[in-house]
Image (cartoon, rainbow, N blue to C red):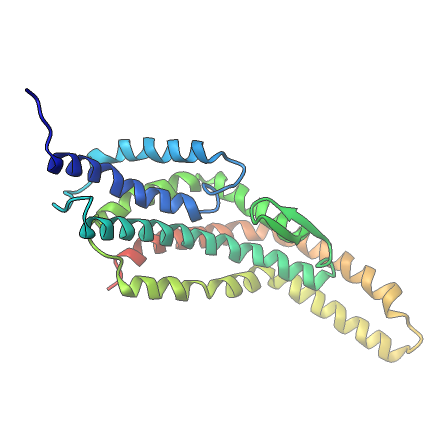
Length: 258
């Protein structure tokens, strides 16, 4: 008679549950795979299929029962690792979306709000435009496939059973500083153009006090802002690709931080 012991059941479950936890953690945070427009059942099924394909490629797993304190700790670790990897991409895309906030504030379009399904909140129109722009670039050079490839490589860089390095968590916290630096860097052409425009308007107002800054200055600022955005968008493509490349590399560097 064919019988299966509890130890064999735990070993069989752990082979699938632990990698599934890391994958589902990534899907919960990563902007593209966590998109609210995709049904949750589809995401869960995709994560399960990916787990089934990934299991034969995994390094040897720790001989720890799944239904135990150590097994639950490993399960939590895998979920945390997936969340951290997804959070890297979340911070990266948020940094580019910050460019839209800065541009909107500089051009006077910050008051034009629109519902963004990506953020599930009201955001400036320019920020939503940058959000769509950065997602299209992400898909253009197969960023979604690179994320999955990086996820597969993470099981070799940080095998199941090893905890998330403390220095890796610190590096992730410091990575959040790129939200402001990259946002200002990408918006610098618009900031520079509007700074010169505002200085020129200020000089004109000083030279002619009767000059009505509200009837002339605001439309001029918007016009210069639109022209600067139009001219700077093609230059942002290689810069955003460079940011994505650094993010993909950091996802694995974070896991092997010493």
